[in-house]
Length: 551
Image: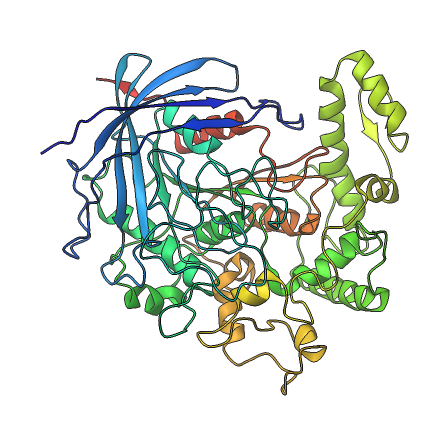
């Protein structure tokens, strides 16, 4: 029996569509409680019930300012594994447009946007969502509250504004730094199917006091969600061979990991443990904003990039440690043997030429796009305040040192990710069932300040790093089942991670022959997404999707 109780929700998006131009406005949600029924796994069968939906309506304002009335079918909190550890997190929502601007549409062959709301490697849930775009950290009764996490937890409200104390959060992100719902709403209005999976995350603790959301739980859960969708081909609307992942910050990292590691056998035992569907978990394309990834090399990359920048207090970090880590990055970068993107004019990328590569390939083009879009008077004002930029009327140029001074304070202390005192969120992410926080690099363990008896990483850490790092699947074990299309974005003022992290990812994917669309947003910070309309268009282009067919 179909559930057709109609709920009305109004959604307004006011976001600039031009890459490199600051977003304006925000997202406002005003939703009543939905009455959708869970489907798909109450009997452990993992079979999607096409009839177990609620019909909802919403208004989406696109990046051009045009409002679109969208009626869609909404399936809520479908458990996507047959042996869930915690169904509060291991469930997903599905939203399928059936009418756009008064015209009935058929989304049966539309691309599927798999949008995660992971932030800070914290848990995310769809259990309390009342419609599309409602995923959040937390998730109502039955979910274990994060415990033992060294960073702040988040509000369970899907419309919560970013907390100033939450790492990585800003106007584009939820309170843990995960993406807001802009991409989902625009995708729905474009006729795409939207799947929003929850996932376990760090800090979750069961009644026995054991942690059950540490690495690799988040990627295992998201792979299981993909498998659920693919196993229901013909039942779940949309083209299951055209799944496009999207995520921000840590969510951007797991989005890239989904794309890089499709069908990798190293996850099989973990997927079997939770009763994931026995099918492919490969996805078609990746959308990643400021991905916090390659964690075992992230400390070195961070110091190479931001080592000379002071903290917001004006205090410099320990320069001996910073230089040690910067040297480690130089060694790692040399071993990668990556080449610059086509047309960049750069061959092998090393620690010696990476600053110039970033300037010419990303930073100066980003500033140029930004300045060109300003009015003459606004451009003159901006340049007067930012004299490090030379503007010849068509192009912006500047030095690396000038750019670093312009960005200013670094976000993180040293080491940025594997903290000597085990205080970083990533230390929590690599915790075990009985230990909240652990070191995951040899340098971090060697310099531990918490009084650990051993000064080495524990024996299971190397395997966990492979499970959590997309570069493992792109460099060490090149994966033939990886995604071949990559949309990667980063703000130029983002000091949550190093600029080389996403640039390395882009270079490696293109070196392997993949299609890459990578750019930086000028003067934007962590979590920026200033060209969401372009992302939705890109999905149609790479998937070959024309338009939702009229019924």
